Length: 115
Length: 109
Image (tube, rainbow over all chains, first blue to last red; front, side, top):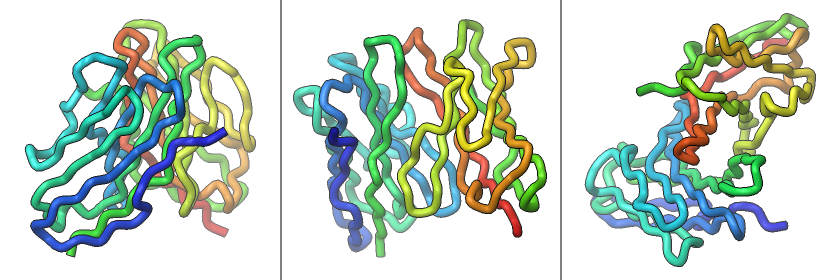
């Protein structure tokens, strides 16, 4: 079956521009996460959506970052007025929250380069 | 509060040597712990979960509740084991995953 997909796979943008990154989770997965992976660094949690609950935004690094999840499925991460330090790979992951055996599934990531 | 701690950012060993990647967690309930791996140019994927008590690619991990640890071990490292390894805790009370900061394993020939 289809896994988690993300688009675009690569995005090059100029400093100061806004970007939107898209995540399509696995169908039926109620939990969706965004992470950031900077060059040579580990995973940095950004935001977490769980069903209809208010999202956990505790990992967003600044108010330039926002995310939404429409209809409990597709999610968009928006970065406004991009800065060079935003350059990183942005990963999306999803997992079910019922059925008893949970595993998080990751997308391939979007590599963002801010010039 | 840091839920999952991986104290080593980088671990280098020679091929054939034993390897242990450390993971400690903080959680007072019954933890559900995982190891994820990311090989070069591949997506993050599940390596093993403690509940399955399995050995995958020669790796094992034992949950030690007394020490709140879930270290990943392999008796004889191979070059193809070189990758980024993440320990993860599923916090069932909040239906949320927490990941450690990762350890990069470099197996030298």
